[in-house]
Length: 252
Length: 213
Image (cartoon, rainbow over all chains, first blue to last red; front, side):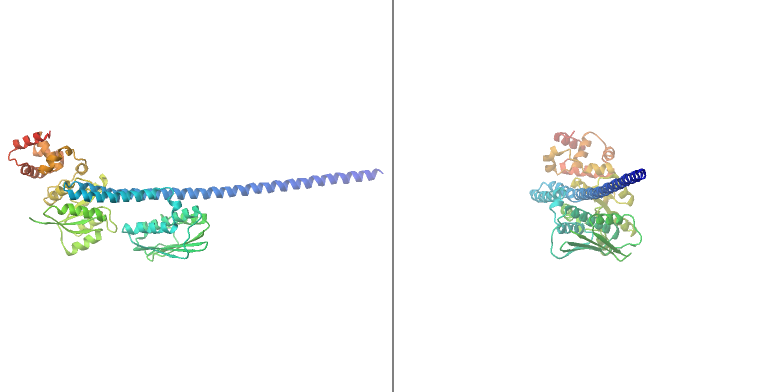
């Protein structure tokens, strides 16, 4: 009789012990799982913050670029027109009043178009291909070099505003690079829009560079990280003295 | 009258044309070409000489400084006046260093550019930055515009007349206005002719009558 109760006691004890181990195991599993969840949520939040920081930086850079353009236009174009108007109106003859009026009308037009470029909603309402046309026009009007825009595929706009913003900034950076470093005689942009696939190719016939080194001031790493932020791809082909071609593709 | 052959370099077409029209009103100014960058100027000068170049600073391709350096390198004898929007003293000093003959702001009194051209061609121009700024300042004699119209007097001539009425000598006036004595004498002769007077005392009386004190 006594050995039975001792056996029973041992079985019960080991049973309870096993139960403790199992529940400990379950608790540990739950804790580990929760920790993993927290970690992955944290990672997602970091990625979101990173993306948002990229967008803010891009917005800031586009603003700065716009302000620089406006400041230049005020000085080089509107300032000159106003000086000319002053010169013309200095002449007491009545014909100069008419000439002065014409000049002032021209200045009003230029001021209107400038104020449009500062308008905050400009980017939102802007069609991507119109933006490309405007940027190339600016380059050609300044007499820097010839430009050309070609398109293929059905022209649709980019629904995701952040993607449009980053693409706009990428195009501006590539054009700035070409102007600052390449001394080209022409710059061509080719836009291909095939369903959700958008492809952009920017080519120039300038001095090029060695793609194995990372020349300072081109911000090549910046270009890469920005296209990554919108899950796109960028390929840069260049050889010294043989021009440069930048191909970008992204799903929109 | 000996013609002064002038070429202009400015990439702002409207401004260049407007300025050329204003300069053409002078009977001895002959505008032989308007170019939009330095390279065009160099190739024009290879075929035809000119007496004076009026150039802007900012031009695509070869800009103002590049053009001036190239002309100096080629030992070209052409006189150079920089006509610029920049009222920055560093840019002015650099132009002096490069050897330009004069610097005029685009918003200066139009008469001042004409005077400066004559001073440069007659080798009596003095380069001074305060004078450059002064040329673009408002006309303090606007209230005398009826006299300006009647006697065809410019801001500078009024200024000189005022100092004569105050009893300043030519040398003193030259120092105050950053002009050469020769220039002041030339202006004085013109003022005499325009006001139709033959003596200094008549001149001073006319000045006082106008209210120039």
